[in-house]
Image (cartoon, rainbow, N blue to C red; front, side, top):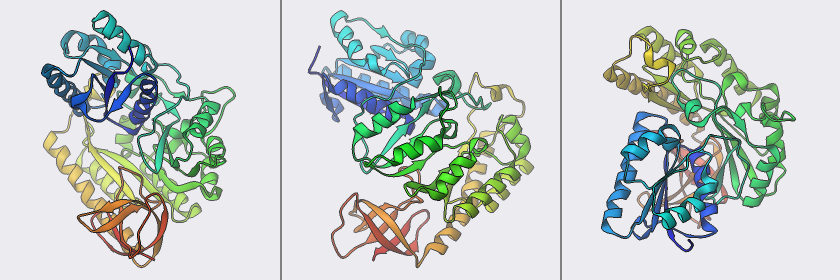
Length: 438
């Protein structure tokens, strides 16, 4: 069946967004994509199942789509991604509102599943086993930047994480496929590399490849203006990659390193490699060898057995590390993870309070960094005009899209979205900077 109107909702992380973009390209071969869910013949919801809150959001979106189905215009609901990959049999039995389910490696089946739904009028479970994906055409949904998923799955087995049980073992996308994928995207501007652990890229390929080698090849493509690295585990950060950060002009001096904690006992319980002291030495080395580098990380508060002393060690780490950006999250107790059965689970109220304290500590760091930038000029890529503030906004090298702050700036002359401008920083807000175009 061809010519249907398809509405697509993508939930969860940027890696899920890439999967959605690949699915959109496949769907576009036979159907029309619509952003108005009320006019869609089929709604596809690409789900996340990493945490309980993610699963609840996914189910909520499915039930919202079911309400549209009752009104008569919407004919079919298809659920894809992490939720059915992990819970397909339960969803088939309990979530009757959905007509079909596909897993994290099943997106290429989407048009065939739609045909089957309309020809047989039966519910379908098309969830398969996660496998090594090749780079394929995409319908990019971002402007000025694009994500590149260089691997899927994870083999680190952190004790709080469900990803290996959902997406399988770590699998690098073949080297040449990634180069072709980016070349086919044309002018992407800023390319953002993502995976569960980007630093491990190529460890499972034959011949073996490295992240630095991939970055050099991507840097040679004319459509790539800059490359940003997210989710680079500290223990896998190589000499070769640090050297690339120093010498490659296209590699943005920014690195996301998910430390998750800094107390040695908690790190060991999390099955994280390294110690708080080793992490501080790594941070100091990066700042020394790559002057001006912007470091970002994420941390979990309230992991089982975390005492006030353990938590205070994390606070001290935040104060010493002086990271440009950081995200803090409450520990989420997930069944089928090793941490689920640990004793001394921390109370929700305590976890909430600890997250607030972490943000308070990081705000002091951000204030110090922002103060050091006032009076200086930074290059900012313009992303739009804020009608409420009556000024333009964009990102400097230390701002990753969606997760970090912005630079708001005034300009007497018109500004073109997607172009770089020199902006003098004159003031700061909580996480954003205020500037004037030079």
